[in-house]
Length: 148
Image (cartoon, rainbow, N blue to C red; front, side, top):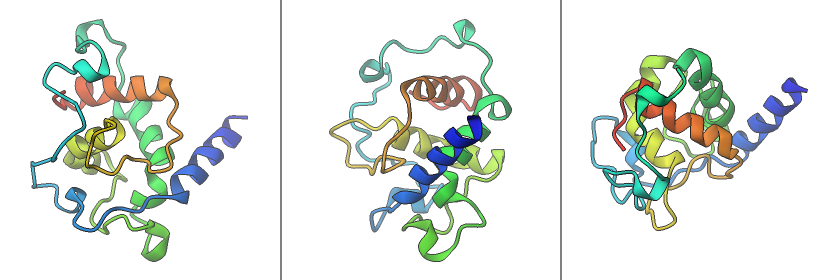
């Protein structure tokens, strides 16, 4: 059953990864994220600010690697080339923990985009269940140090 669920997530991730031309994901050194659609320093659009002392230990190994490969790997995998990338810039590869760390702020902004955001939400076809979004947020903030 787990393999079937993973396959469904992988299919969803591959179905639509197109990125807008001039996308801010093209350069990890560009720290401007544009309008993050209501994400602010307090995280008010997303609920209460996370206190990492009260959260379970969520790491790249325990959660992030599976999340990234399942929801992002269909377009942002290093082995994915050409049209199979669905428009994802060739330099946006999330295969390793250091690559994910390099792109963490942008990945965070794209997955937790707001309705008013100018950013393309990722994955563009949706499909991320709320429990995974909650764990994703804790992982990004508490393990990778992304600011809300």
